[in-house]
Figure 1: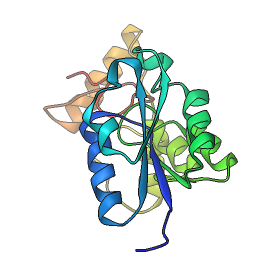
Figure 2: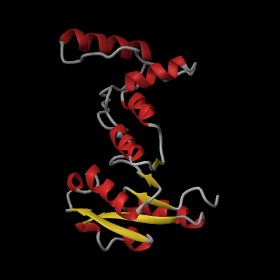
Figure 3: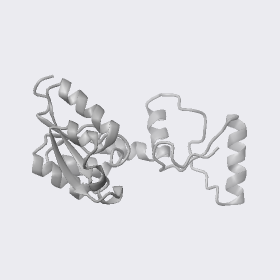
Length: 178
């Protein structure tokens, strides 16, 4: 796919970044690695065509620092950003900020991230598309009250076991309880 992107900034680290770098290399696309102080000698940094320091070791101050990543994007003139997994990959605000720079976000649209960042909204989208989601409830259950706990137990009895509950805004498997 020559001409797809000239240069991709990978807003992640480790093996995830290395996989994106290898794929870009196979496609003839230049890569930019970002890194924290702790990761300056990491393989993803040396594998990339370019690399930019984005902050201290703490992820909150580096890999989750949107301003630092956007500064690296501007400095390297990358034409796309691949978020990898975790960190900012599910943050619609990051996808919007990348788009505001006139750069392609390689991932779901901000609106899709918004819809699927809330499990109840995601369930509604799935139902409206005619799919059959896993058995459960279409309404959130407040388990902070005895009534909510009783309701959750009724839903679990209807759904069957094993059953699990989770925060509606939890990412990936975080917040999952059996």
